[in-house]
Image (cartoon, rainbow, N blue to C red):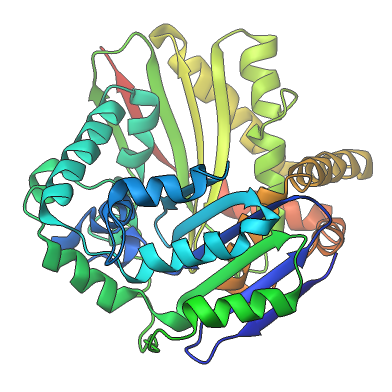
Amino acid sequence: MEYQKLTLNNGIRVVLLQVKTPIAHAGLFINAGSRDENQDEHGIAHLIEHVIFKGTEKRRSHHILSRMEDVGGEINAFTTKEETCIHATFMKEYLERALELIADIAFNSVFPEKELNKEIEVVIDEINSYKDNPSDLIFDDFDERLFPNDPLGRNILGKAEKLKRYKRKDLLTFIKNNYHTDQMVISIVGNVTIKQVEKLAIRHFGHFSANLRNKKRAQALIGPPFNNSQKKSTYQTHCIIGTEAYGFTHPARMSMHLLNNMLGGPGMNSRLSMSLRERNGYTYNIESNYANFSDTGIFSVYFGTDKENLDKCIKLIFKEFNKLRELKLSEIQLSKAKKQLIGQLAIASESNENIMLSMGKSFLVYDKFDNLEEVCRQIEYISSIDVLETANDILNPEKLSFLIYSDK
């Protein structure tokens, strides 16, 4: 599968992957997220994502919500630390309807104060739901301690006391300062032609004035390693062990993905799952995660367990860390790890929506999209020495931080 691309006069990039299916997917990716907020804008990127559905210059909220659903389609949006995405799924004949609607809410939202105030209460309720779930809350808490006093460490949702102070002008200011047209990508997967896409993209996005980015994000600043325990009213003890990892352009990022998948990826046969859950029955949920950003990343291991088993779990985790730091993988072990990761990626690539989302994100970061075959080649190129060096760098005990929630 080969993609086709073009660039509008205002700098917006458009990429199409043509597939023979009656269902199409389209998304507008904007290289702006919670990391781009000033100190007095915490939570505003995510709030904007909510309020863009509440009215434009020509549509009210119910018109926006009904526009795609009336023809059996869907429209949604999400915010991460580095991007905002508005995306839709629909029958291919409604491509223009989808693109016109996405353009309207991205560029013409009016953010009525009444709707803004209502949506602030919705976001506050979302924040409170996280506070009720320690297995989610601990990740935000860990990030904030890992990158203290840096916007990358702040949670995406914001805080209630700040959200209540935001007015319409604050949202418009953030958009003006961060929604740059040369940092936008329209990603489309469907049975449509590049000529159709070009015509519709020019019609609905081409007339917006260019707003080009003239500065780079500040380098993320990591804090010193920490070991923190907090008293929480929870049945389980929750723990995260982690550190800074590699960004999007780091040469070791693929070996980091492989290492993470071996340790605690989605497979039940991951090293940590086999050790803590299968052999010892200490935990129901054990996982490792690797989140990478433009200039840095976060590696973490999370588990929940009975408080009497906390130290036993940590000991077993470090036993697995040490194996990977001290013992080079055999050819059989390395081959098995690669096949497992490649298989997972191949299954994910069966979803055209996943491809659309991956393609849009990839163009934001690299201005290209590697197909499954190219990604597999990169994985096959990883050596056992690469994994060993990555393990010694990332799993170094002197770099690792701890955060524990417990009722004791």
